[in-house]
Image 1 (spheres, rainbow, N blue to C red):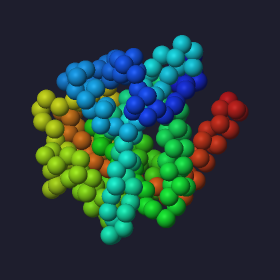
Image 2: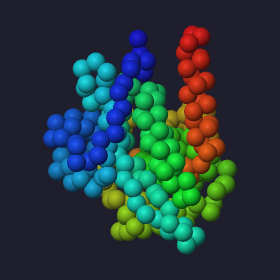
Image 3: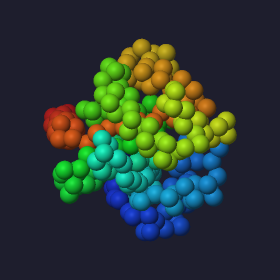
Length: 248
């Protein structure tokens, strides 16, 4: 039986509740899939986050993945806005396709939007692999960069958070982040983009064309606006998937 169908627990922990054991277990997963990693850098980076979504197996509580969450203030059209930055996100390969993290993230984002209904909220992410990009492109109605060329007005949101968080690494002309040849990047056998995959999925092809140097660690900065249409679409997918599973 595929691990995808095994029940996982996803919980959000503020950064001050992340223990040494949590850090050790998260780094174990992270270092399996990324080159140029070291524990000291991992811990220092984690201390700059607001919190972590921690994914564990229901049985045994083994950590099998995580994603970070950081909130920052933005100024969009001379009005205050909220950006939620997702940094490192990793899930053990046996569990690729499991939706526990996506559901937990969507619920927390929905709560944030409900408590600030008159404030624009954006999901900010940088993607060194196509799977992270697809989380955005498949679930956010308004997102940038976009294969169709739509939502170009959001590019200034990308510029703003990249210049705030990654001043020394942002190539504004190409809208890519380049952390250097020794930056962390996916290992060669993880989430590679084959010619068949390019041909079969236009969104993956777009990511590969827009960030052609992703294999050495350059990152594509992206943004999605949190809106009711995105939430409705996401939760409709969840209902549809449950019905399909119930009938199979």
